[in-house]
Length: 294
Ligand SMILES: N[C@@H](CCC[C@H](N)C(=O)O)C(=O)O
Image 1 (cartoon, rainbow, N blue to C red):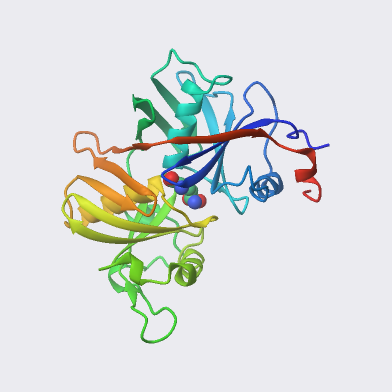
Image 2: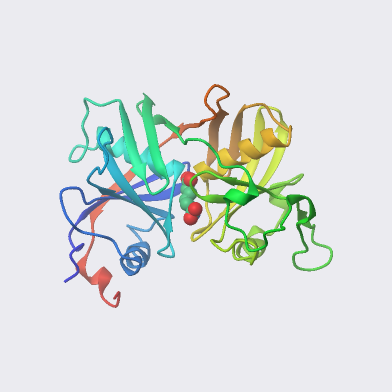
């Protein structure tokens, strides 16, 4: 029997970004890509991201989090999922510590401090964005944002061009458009995510700046497809908009699932993301779920 069988999970969401939280602290258990895909295939445990808690490895941190996409791949950061984990580690009756109001979580990409503002609202310090193309693995060393153009689908489809690359612990390519909802993201998302220019694949953002303090955003997530919200994507969109002198350093980012407030703090270059969490249900991983998974 798979060692993860019968483990308790929490099903949550951050603005509709489907998050499953699995607490493996105090064990040596690890989730494989096959395990993650098997859990994603189970309707009650289904996720866009699976947030797996492991014992802290660095003094001063509260847990080490591994993040899995629906396709079993691992991500360095997940903004919406980090808010959900922070809620679980404070408020869940079995795994929470109600004495805490702030936590520092560690992921492959670094430290993510999270603070509880209201019962169900958290701010996560998403750290410093990486901005230059040369900090993001790209297949073409002479790649220049200014001449990147992509004709998608039929000739009368709008052309996407000149993306802004921002790494928020995971890679994002932000395209500024007039109306993100005019595009067939289902069709163009996989083409862009897997474009040869992105050897690590990329999360794809379609962003429209409505006002200096308001951005409308849709996201095709690497390894998960269209989601209702992407926290790191919202951070990337705000950073990209500031770089292009299209927005202020603080703005509301409206996603299909709702609004996040994003601030790119001038004093230390860190990006702060504030938004809600929702607990949906808890369950246990049925042994049968792993049958067929290697
Ligand atoms: N939904 C997340 C981002 C998840 C990671 C992404 N799909 C990747 O592989 O980089 C968020 O809220 O930030």
